[in-house]
Image 1 (cartoon, rainbow, N blue to C red):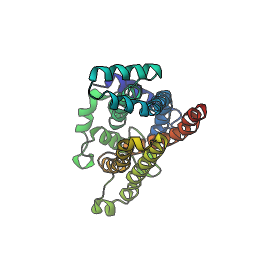
Image 2 (cartoon, helix red, strand yellow; image 1 turned 60 degrees about the vertical axis):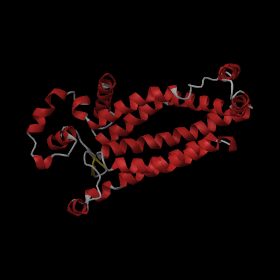
Image 3 (cartoon, one colour; image 1 turned 180 degrees about the vertical axis):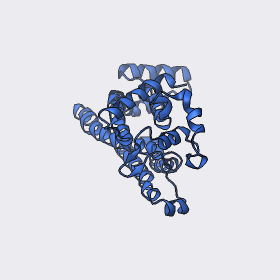
Image 4 (cartoon, rainbow, N blue to C red; image 1 turned 30 degrees about the vertical axis):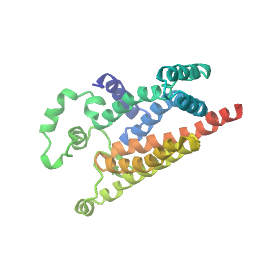
Amino acid sequence: MLDFISKPLGQFMYFIYNTVGLHNYGLAIIIFTIIVRLLMLPLTVKQYRSNAKLQEIQPQLQEIQKRYKNDKEKLNAEMVKLYQENNVNPAGGCLPLLIQMPILFALWGVISRPVTYMLGKGSEVQALLAAIPEESRIRGYDELSIIIYNKLLNMNFLGLTLGLVPTLDIKKIIAEPQYAALLLIPLLASGLTYLSSKLAMASSNTGAENAGANQMGNSMMIVGPLMTLFFSFQFPAGLGLYWIAGSVIQILQQLYINKHVLKKKEVAK
């Protein structure tokens, strides 16, 4: 469904791989993620500015909701008036996120299906797979099996094969020490997710009137890293590296937004 996005992104990632990526899959993922996140930075900044405006008018909004709780028509009219007077779009914080989500899912597809989207050989997948012995396949990731077996891309990054799936299987770890090193990827991914969530919560600066939102944010600080940890053991390490690179960039973006976007709004008050 997202092929119209995944195909050009896959070609762009392959271009990076062949040029500044120095024919290294891991380096290409990192550079690719940096470029895409920087291109989406204006949308991210817009999202935070919109959320900040909504927070500013929360006391007035709650007063209107309390005053007209029994008159829905008047309530809606007063809320619209408040939004217009303060130049606030209640959907402004969601729209950038809705634009980003298809792009992020398409990127996920590119990294998990490099034969189709990077090499442009989607029609040849089954024929290429048929030539690979069963024991050389990565369960659930046919295209990564093809890449590794036929050495179509250099997937070695800092001594790790990014097509392998991290595991807690002691037998595999003992048989192949590389699996022990691969455990760093889920740990880093979940740790960085926690740090990113913590910075985002700190920037929201919500007060007692938004206790419910604070409680939800605190829950996400726990649930998010746990979900990241779980999924990092379900997908190949290349996807984990993409998550790590994205989280690092998100942290840097959050620091930038906290200092140059949200702080400026406070000074303007």
